[in-house]
Image (cartoon, rainbow, N blue to C red; front, top):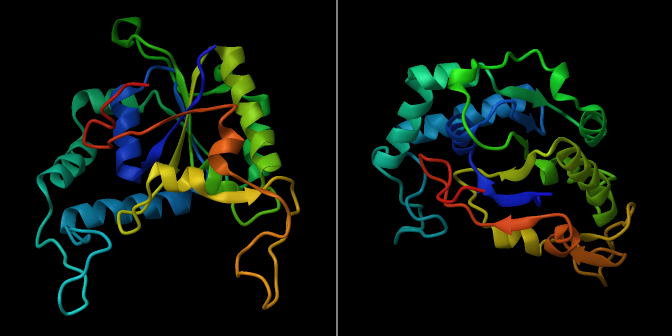
Length: 248
């Protein structure tokens, strides 16, 4: 059984380009948000790449206290935008065979994973001559974000979901990937995500009152990396116009 992989956070454009260039039928992309939310984020991402208005050095300011900005899109941004919007023949063909699903809640996600059967998809199979070698993938984009700020935001809640994902991948002999979304204006490293703490059990409330640090948990906590370490292999990905440097 192939261990599921938890990759570095990715922009919507990086995610889409990676799936288009590396997908193997019948890969399924599960977007853990509503369709409107994802399309808005993707549109804003591409707009920033086109305008080149994102800070050139995130977290640094100029002498006047204002963030420095690019005057135009970088070559890498232009390549990503061109690759996604130019619609080369292979990209058009590949996109027809990628199954995309939107799940707005944790309950929807668990129900979908529990009942998932690739044969239920209406996405047509490519011709045998056009199939690429490799394993089919199921890719979850925004697993943590979907749980955050809900009653399922705990190690127990995450494990309940990830165990279903792992069981599905094992049953189908598919590769499972989890990728968290990130904004170009709010860069987050993989290490930061894995070091974030959450309560061990569901229902752990945040401490309130002057004696406690704001945002502290009233119950026992654990780092996300430790909670998910049993299920996932963590891997850094240098997202670029090719998706990531290393195949997983």
